[in-house]
Image: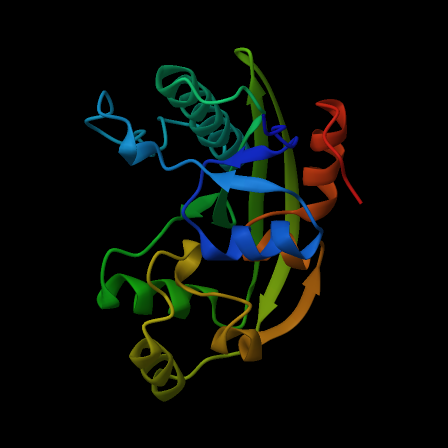
Length: 206
C-alpha cells in the first residue's frame, strides 16, 4: 500500500506559478477547475462598483481557492490544502486587468510608460472551507516607451493573459527602471507570503 505524500493543490494554470513553487521545493499537484463537470462558468472576475483594487484581488483569490476546495471534495481527491493566486495592476486607483486584444494592450503600455504603478498579488489557501489570504504590493516604474518600442513588444505576444499587458520575467523586464517590493509577486506568486500561509496550514516549507 503506497503512502500518500503531503502536498498541496495548485488551483491555477499559470506556468509562472508552477515554476515559482518548484523553485522553493513545494510538492504540489495541479487542480484545474475547468475539469469539474459542475463548473459551467468561471469565477466572475468583474470588479464590483467602488471596490478597491486591494479588496478586489483578495476577493477573487479567495473565491478561486474555495472553488478549488469544492472541486477537490466533489472529485473525492485526498484532502490537502488548495492554493490559488491572483494578480492585478493598479495605476493610481484604476485596475488594469488582462488585455483582451492588441489594441487594449497597447493602451495599457502607453498608460504605464514613464510612470509608477503597483502590482497587487494575492495568494490564498483553502482547506475544510477555511480560507486565509495574504497580499503583496510592489511598486514598479517603467521607462518612457515610444510607439516603436511598444509595437515591437506587442509582436512578441507576451502581453497575452498578463495583468497590465506585460510580463516582468520576459522581454518587458527591460522596461523596468525600478522595482520596490517582491519580484516573485510581480511574476504572479509572492513567495514570502506564500510560505507564511503554507506554514499556517502545517505544510512543509523551506
